[in-house]
Amino acid sequence: MIMDLKQVEQLLSKYWEGETSLTEEKQLQQFFSYGEVPAHLMVYRDLFVVEEITLNPDLGLDFDREVLDKLEVKSTSWNFMRIAAVGLILIVISIGLFKLDSITDTKPIAREDTFNNPEEALAETKKAFAMMSVAFNKGQQPVMNMVKLDKTNQKVAKTFGQTSQLPIKTSINN
Picture 1 (cartoon, rainbow, N blue to C red):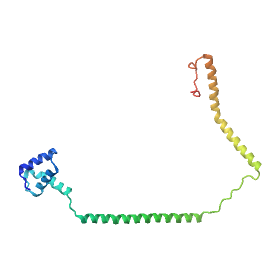
Picture 2 (picture 1 turned 30 degrees about the vertical axis):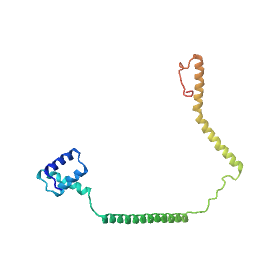
Picture 3 (picture 1 turned 45 degrees about the vertical axis):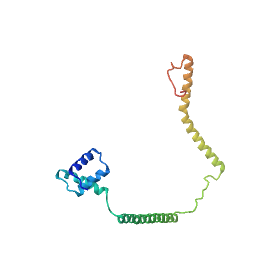
Picture 4 (picture 1 turned 30 degrees about the horizontal axis):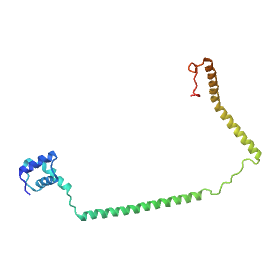
C-alpha cells in the first residue's frame, strides 16, 4: 500500500493527538519501514521501526520449543540437586547424633535422696518455707503502710466532712 505524503502527515498529526487506531498505526509503521521517507519525516522513522520490531518478534515455533526444553532440563536438575542436598543434610545430622550419643555417657542418672531421715527433710522444708514467708512479709510492709495511711485519711475526712479538703490523697481507693 502506497501512501501519499499528505495522508502520512494527517496520520502523524492524529498519532500525536492519540487518536489513531491500530490499523492506522500499522500503516505508519509500514510507510516508515518500506517506503521512501522524505527528509523532514526521517526523525520519526526510528520510532515506528523500533515499535515494529518489539511488537512483532518472529522467532518461530522452534525457538519456543527450545526455550521450554531448556527450562524443563534446568528445573529437573534443580529438583535433583535439592533432593540430594536434603539427603546429605539428613545423613550428616544422623552421623552427628550417633557420634554425640557414643561420646556422652548414656547411663541414667540415679537420683539419691539428700536426706536419710524423713524428719530432717521435713525440718529443712519448713525452714525454706519460713524464709519465703519472711521475704513475702517484707514485701507487704509498704502495702500495709498505705492501708494505715488510708484509714487515717478516712478519719480525717469524717472530721472535716468532705473528702476534697484532705491534705493527703491515696490511690488505694481510686
